[in-house]
Image 1 (cartoon, protein in one colour):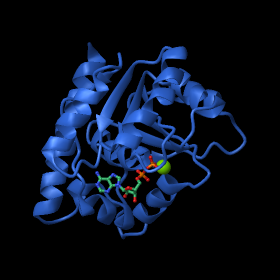
Image 2 (cartoon, protein in one colour):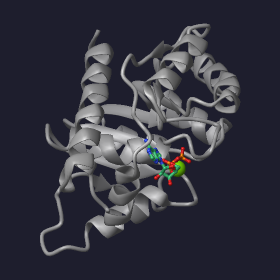
Image 3 (tube, rainbow, N blue to C red):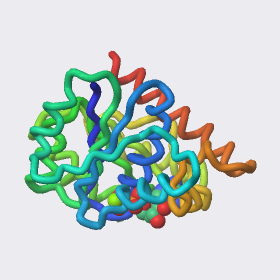
Image 4 (cartoon, rainbow, N blue to C red):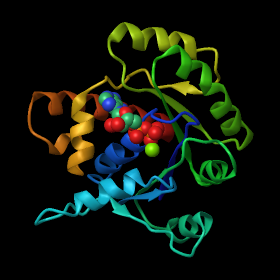
Length: 210
Ligand SMILES: Nc1ncnc2c1ncn2[C@@H]1O[C@H](COP(=O)(O)OP(=O)(O)O)[C@@H](O)[C@H]1O
Ligand SMILES: [Mg+2]
């Protein structure tokens, strides 16, 4: 099993959105799971809504830690095929470091605003300390130019930056409300979001395999 942690000190960067959307895509290839380590439980509630229909999608599964630790839960799944996503709080203290240490890969979503780009340093410092391979993903860019400028600003960091970004699209909010992946929604906006997500996900998987 591959373990991917979503990490960023900044709230609203897109950790939960990416954990949910990528877990749906990974679920097309094999088993996928989410562990929601944020007390706000946004991913867990999305998963709950996902179970509402007559035929709830099989993937991803949601793992409730119950009495066990994250370390024990990851160890129990390690031998199985599939992908585990660990969604975390907007923080970079010990619980997030634990998630990052257990992960094969840390994904750091960042919005292309000056404040968010400047704040990414603390997140990257923690990930460097725990030596987890890191990929930064520019999320919710209002246009291409902002994504390009953000990529230039991020080039001072040693972490890899995904060459594809995710645009600011209301359909990500629709998917959140519906408990779905954007590709499971209808309409042109959903098709465009699904295409960009797949571009990012494919790049991440290729990069992680190297
Ligand atoms: N690419 C995007 N386009 C539009 N809205 C987005 C996008 N990514 C995230 N959002 C919205 O921004 C808010 C914060 O995203 P979220 O994934 O919850 O961030 P985090 O988990 O890092 O705090 C949510 O309302 C989410 O739906
Ligand atoms: Mg979140």
